Length: 228
Length: 190
Image 1 (tube, rainbow over the protein chains, first blue to last red):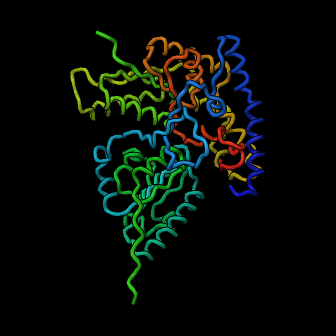
Image 2: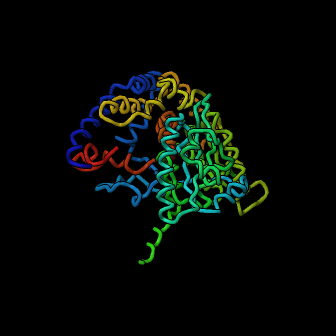
C-alpha cells in the first residue's frame, strides 16, 4: 500500500474495531449465550482475531494467488480454488454451447444481486463499444459477448432495434455476437467451464474469481502485422 | 453392520458461502462413496443439495448397490443469514454499490461489521439450539462449518468435537492479524 495511504488504513482499522466492539447483535448474543446456555460465543470475527488453537481453517485460495505474508498461521490450510461442479453446458444448453464455440467470448456476470437500471446498463454498453472497436482494430472480428443482465423489477428498458442499447451495440446485436440474457439455462460455472471464454467480467466474488482463474483462457496477444 | 463414516457440513444457505461446501460434499462422494454426507442449512439450500446429490451419483464411477449414498439434507430452524441482513439494512445492496471514498467508508465499514452477526440474540439462540439438535442426532465423525455461520461455530466449539472451518475466502482474512509489526493495519488493502 502506498505510504501516504497507510495512516488512513490504520484509521479505518481502528474505526472497524470500534464498530465491532460496540456491535449490538454481537454483544447481546455473547451475553445471552452465556446466561442461557453457559456457552462462549465463537463468531466469524473471532476466527479472524483469536481462533481456537486446536482448530483448522481451510480456505479456497493458494499462496500464489494471494497477498504475500511474512507469517502464515499453521492452522490455515490453503486448498486452492474450490469449485462447485455443475451439470455441463452440453447437457443443458447445446444451443448456447454451439454459439460459444464459434468464437472468443467475453462473459459478463455480475452476480445474483447486481441489478442494473438502464443508465448503468448503457454505461456498460458504452464500455463494450470501446472494447469492440479496439478488437476490430486488432483483427478480432469474431469477438462475442454473453452478458447476463438483471434488470430491476418493473424495468421497462430493452435491447430491441428501437432501444438506446441498440444505438450503441446495434451491429453486434444484429449479427448475434452480443447476447444479453436475464436468465441462462446453464449455470455460470458451467459456461465458464466450457473453455470458450477469453475474459470473465464479474463482481470479484471468490467463486467467480476462482472459476475465472481455473477455466478462462486468455488469448495470446495477436501477432503484430508484418512490416510493409 | 457398523455405522458408515459420516461428515456433516454446516453452512449458510447463500451460494457465495455454500458453494464450497457443496463442492466438498461432491468431492467426498467421488473419493469415498461409502461415506454418508450430511448437509445442514436453511431451507433455501435444499434444492441445490438435491441437485448436487443427483449429479454426484451420476458421476460416481464406483457403483455398488445403494452406493454412493444420497446426501442427507437437514433443515435448520430460524431465519437465514440473508433474511437477517435484509432486516438490518433494507438497502444493503444499494449501500454496497456506493463509491468507496472517504465519507462513504464509514457506512460501508459499519455495515460490513454488522454483517458478521446479522442475527439478533434471540434469533441466534433459536438457530444455535437447532444446530445442537442436528449435531446430537447425527453425531458426525467430522463436522465442517461455514466461516460465516456463527451458530455452527459456537456449537461445535462448545462440544469440542472433531471439526474444522471451511471458508470460500482468501488467506488474507486469516493471516492479516498475525503479521509482525502490526502490518495488518497498514500493509494490505481491503
